[in-house]
Length: 177
Image (cartoon, rainbow, N blue to C red; front, side, top):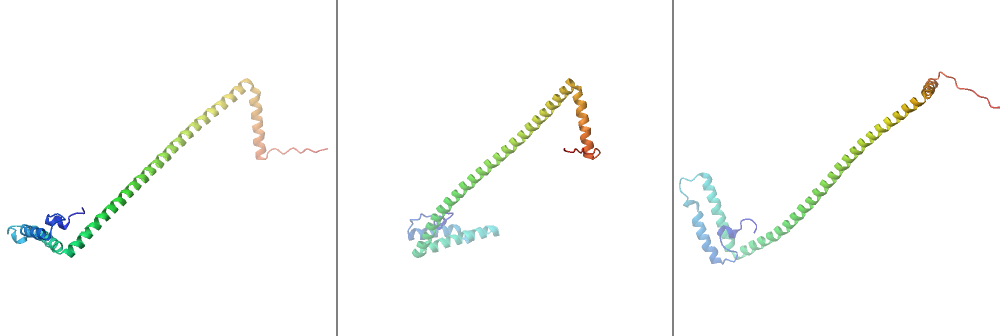
């Protein structure tokens, strides 16, 4: 059902006859009539009682007239169908959103893993580079230890290169014959 119906207000079944509606109205009207309240009730309680009595009167007005009752029943039925449709649509939207959230989470986790792998590879590359630099330095040190003249030749070549870069050594001019 959709919320509180007029049948619920009068506490009768949907299949109730017009006489059943009239009897239920008389009983509920006596129960909810604001004049039946004690004089010590607050204004707020009085308004609430008047609202309940109005609901009972409206329910009786609609359910006691066969044309209005038919129109009301049709609206309730349509509301129930629409509720079913809207519930299905809501369920579909919830499932779609959950699927979307799952995919977003998976993509996010994949990006985080890729980033972690990238930084791990970067760290490994830096370590390998450092080992390579140490290995090359060790190779040169062993070379210098085995061949001391090699270091003096290297230093001289570096000086010539530096002087040539600064333009302090004239280029050699050779003539071809």
